[in-house]
Amino acid sequence: MKFTRADADVFLPQGDELAAAALARVTHLCVAAHQDDIEIMAHAGITDCLDLPGKAFGGVVVTNGAGSPRTGAFLKFTDDEMLAVRRDEQRKAAKLGHYAIQLQLAHPSADVKAINHAGVRADLLAIFAGCAPEVVYLHQPTDKHDTHVAVFLRCLEALRTLPPEQRPRRVLGCEVWRDLDWLVDADKVALDAGRHPKLGEELLKVFDSQISGGKRYDLAVPGRRLAHATFNTSHATDRMAGITWTMDLTPLVADAALDVEAYALGYIDRLRADVAARIGRFR
Image (tube, rainbow, N blue to C red; front, side, top):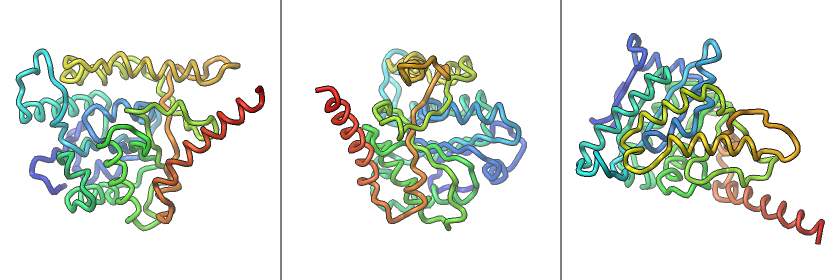
């Protein structure tokens, strides 16, 4: 399997099959911007593939992660040294989570943010055309991280170029740098992120370059999942031990005529209407 960048990394945690075959059997695919995003976004998909026979998880990291913060033991690391560390951390997570395949495309963030970058488009299209996943986990359009939104848009463009019968049946936009607990209840799609909690913690701890660098994802992510589960509803006990909130992006993939900005702003409009109606009922 060849990608457009010479430093792209193809890792097969199972170690005994061809990359194309491993990709082809993926049923749950997460395409994320940076190393560790997958483990934040798609813990539910990882555990689905551990718990259900015949399921296989695949991870894709689009950028090289060169701009990550660094302190402590990593303070004096060059960008090239950090790239190597982050690549290896992502490989360790893939092995720990029993992924079928882990791809790291190594594109600079600037290339992903560029409209119609040929290399980014070609790589993503090759991945989406090389598998037929039941569900695809992407970043969501209201995220506040520029690179996350750019990766989402590049993925959407690639998915829309596939023949309709080859497009995934379900595409979900996952929270990372902006929580999705603000969505009105009718718009929320809950992923059960409370299963295999020990594995969830270990997957996050793999990314020591981030944790030692001052980003305590190992504490914050499980805490957020628990908080979502507890504050999901005020008049019922918790149904899950952890929730990752997502929004349904399937309509954007199925209908290329849908405007992405209007689709995203529709969620905000429905929140505004919900707030106005609740205040109006009691004033």
